Length: 260
Picture 1 (cartoon, rainbow, N blue to C red):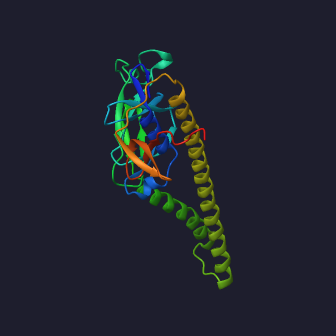
Picture 2 (picture 1 turned 60 degrees about the vertical axis):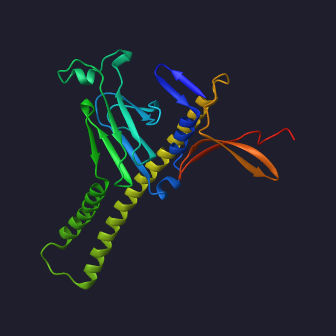
Picture 3 (picture 1 turned 90 degrees about the vertical axis):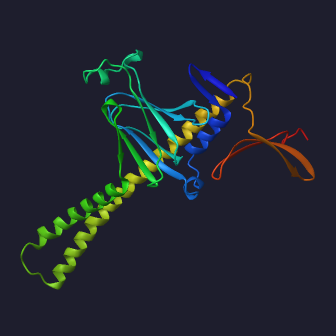
């Protein structure tokens, strides 16, 4: 099934494949090629995020990110490419964020590609569509160091330069421990909130894309890349293969459900 809106083309195989990505199947990561990515808009203009189909050259719009802290989180694959496009101001043809930098205001675009390194990858989009790849492991180490140093400062303040009795030392250890527990719990709650938001976003986008594929019964069906015969309960059935990889597959069985 093909859906066209201007230069945007959506096929059943592409849409279903994207739904599989958005729903975050665990097999993506376990396959060795899956990566969790986050795209954060830190610029002054709204940004449209497109998934790029490298085989057909089509662009499937995924989400519009608001200026300053708009974000998209999803599961993807190594070598998947996304196009980031500035959104014109007030529905026009120019982007004010670019114009303020002494340029002509032409809306800019850039591409980011999922690398084969870290399992978690973050792309921070700055003004002018400059993209910064954030090192998650370095950020995690820095955050842990800051968390420990805050509680360490409390202990040093209590201790000062004086010698303390064992009972006082035990009290101080408990105080520092409570500090660590409090800070770690806050980190966990923040992380849980992010995961919940990500899950809800994926489900909403998945439902929306599902509606796109079924909106027009008159649109032609995407041609399968292969047709196979599958035997079930002594009957041979025709199977159309639209997409097949180790971590995701899209097969359609002809006349699998009958009136009987």
